Amino acid sequence: MSPNSPDASPPDVGVVIPAGGRGERMGGSVAKQFRPVAGVPMLLRALGPFTRIGDIGEIVIPLPAAVLTTPPDWLADLAGRGTVQLVEGGATRSDSVVRGVRALGPGCRIVLIHDAARPLVTADTICAVIAEVRRGRCAIAAVPATDTLKRSDAGGTRVLETIDRSTVWRAQTPQGFPRDLLLRAYDTVLGDFGDAKPTDEATLMEVAGHEVTLVPDSPWNLKVTTDQDLAVAERLVET
Image (cartoon, rainbow, N blue to C red; front, side, top):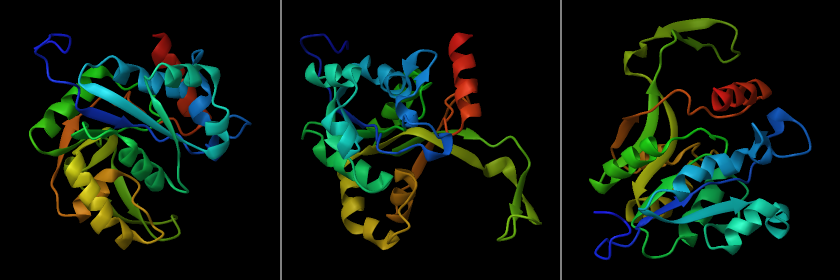
């Protein structure tokens, strides 16, 4: 049934795109999530596909306090039109995601978390993750490892063993969860991590005892961490 049909259910998917990082590994005076990828801010490219999916009703972007006070004009315009909600992020990525999830309205039964530094996500991947969560599952976009994998010693100078790559996947985003399960995990197990907060929500859900389903994704849904990553992303956009 089309989302625009009079009988269609109201959108029940909320998205959180944490954008509070400083992107220090890339250097420069502009945080990486606001740097242009082929002329378009990275964050804007990342959130674009989510705005065009009918099941998605809300997008929350946690930001540093200074950016929240004076956001870029393009982001302020989106917020002013009700497309996205801007909130203050926390001290860590995990804290920012928690704040974002709690800021979603009560009608959001499904939550997607997406990295602001993944500007090449596709609508097909987003919809595939949503479909798995509608079945009551936790789900993450991921790609199988293709390189030979080595485990090193603590100093990172000596190989200890070769890891069987046949069951190893690289986690990507979006990651999707039933909202009630995610909120319960925040309340019951997030504190167990102490200062070593989980690097993604799938880790949190695994510790909470939930199975996480893998949704095969494209390796082009890369995370931009370095200037070299940015150059690759720009070439992919331009091809």
